[in-house]
Length: 113
Length: 116
Image (tube, rainbow over all chains, first blue to last red; front, side):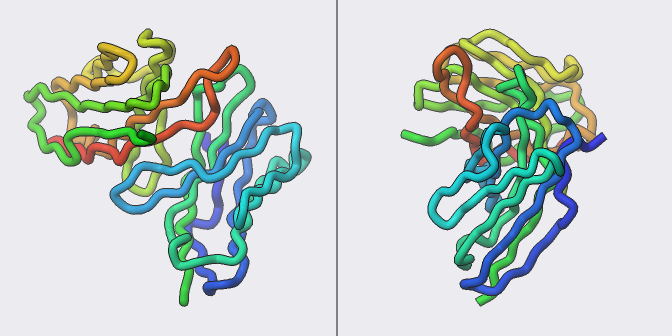
């Protein structure tokens, strides 16, 4: 049973436009959410996170939005750059489970020039 | 130094072999993790060490044996593996903050394991 779902396996966006990656979760006991970026032959790299008590967190070109009632979060990248082409994983941490990251399946983002 | 290193990068082993994967970090992190990632799947947690003690074992078969000799090193000893154990094995670490560990985990590049 996949508790964290990224329903789009891939996404293609033109350079300079906005990239929106989506993530849904089923477990209302998740307390904290993170986005990781992964290039081939490298480990996942932490990008941005959000606590369940917030609905938005922004860091430069990256913004994460959380809609708790819909159990949905999204990552916005604007403007998109060629170096953003990678696989993006959404991850969640349950309450009192601070060390247990539960990952989604990932979305491959391709930025076209 | 903000890096988690893993050796070897690639490993091919037979089902009767014994091998070890190694992970190292020098960021002062006191939690270290092993994840397994199959192709086109997300990473799945295997083990967590907190302050050099095993704190989480996600019901991993005993043919995988973790070891944390000190706060910077994490090993994964492999014995009598099956072909279905072929995967990317990722190591991660996180730092203590307040009374718990930081949610952000830092990952190494992984070891690509093939069991023949």
